[in-house]
Each structure stands twice: as structure tokens, then as C-alpha cells.
Image (cartoon, rainbow, N blue to C red; front, side, top):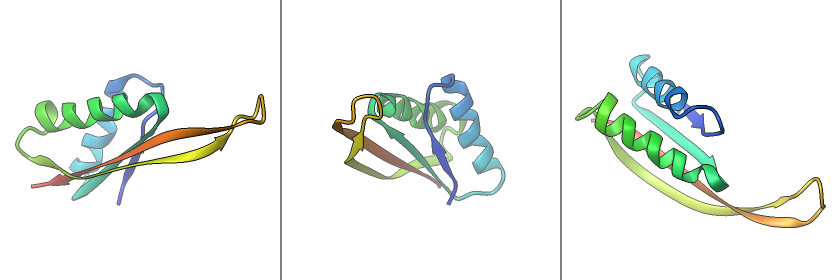
Length: 90
């Protein structure tokens, strides 16, 4: 199952990556993000669902979690939230 990891690139890059996966025959695509990029992942999913592939894709499953990450600069542990949004072809 194809996955798209959301980072700091322009939103359109991630939207097009998801659309390309569906155009290449994928039935499901998972959008993953951590921390501050969670809202961007939601934006990507909604743009794909409502603008680019309107009526062709639905949200299949949403998983939220958190994980501990060690900050390399300080060596301290931090908890970072994560999200996985599965988009499924109708």
C-alpha cells in the first residue's frame, strides 16, 4: 500500500503525490504525518477528496498515536503525535 509522508514541502506536492498513486492504479493510499505536520496531512486528504478526486475517494480509516523521540540537540525525550489517514477508492 503506497504511503505519502507529509513534511515541509508545498502542500500541492503532497496532493499530487497522492493523486499520482491513485492514477497509477492504487486502491488505497496512506497519508502519514507527525507533530506540526498533522494539520497539513488533513489538508492534503481533504483537497484530494473534495477537489482533485471528488466523488472517487473516501476516507477509509484514521489512526492517531504518539511516540517518544529523543531530541538530538538536548538529549531529552519528547512525545510527538502521529496520524495516518487512509484514502480508499470508491
